[in-house]
Length: 248
Image (cartoon, rainbow, N blue to C red; front, side, top):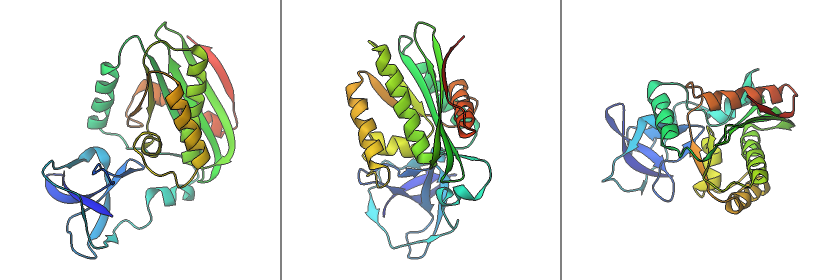
């Protein structure tokens, strides 16, 4: 594991980074430790609250001890409610960041919000997609996936959005917005796809083929309308519904 010094809650910590020196984000969280010593406790901090210090460089540190027990993804199947991939949680800062991102997107582009959910992990899974076209048209898509994982659901939602957008033959920019850090990592940050390699490879290929597409991460459950709609669609799909419809 590689680490860099970072700021967290006004303190200097060590944050886990990838080979390029960027924060290694999993399920919207980053591993941090307050000490470089062997056995130091490792915590899971919200990614938006961790900022790498520019002057720091990546380095190997002795193994630490996980203070939180199993990771969020390992615990995901223990509850009875739907599990979503890569949630950041709420917060004014996350909501503000999402709003600023949307304001910065060009008005002549397509905006596609995607989300995946499952009940248990693995368990009944579903994908939801909400697309806004620059001419004012809007589409909702829900797809029941049967038994699967939250990451499969997140990736499948992105694939479904790309399929629909490709049929429209876009001639302007396309913004794909997901709250899955996993999906962003394996599709655009060079993370190795240890699971779902065929699905990841297929989506990477489609991303190259559809012109003007950019992937963006947005926080989930902070009131972003498109994300909330995709979330509701994904949950409907978990319940077994599949549909595709134009909406007002």
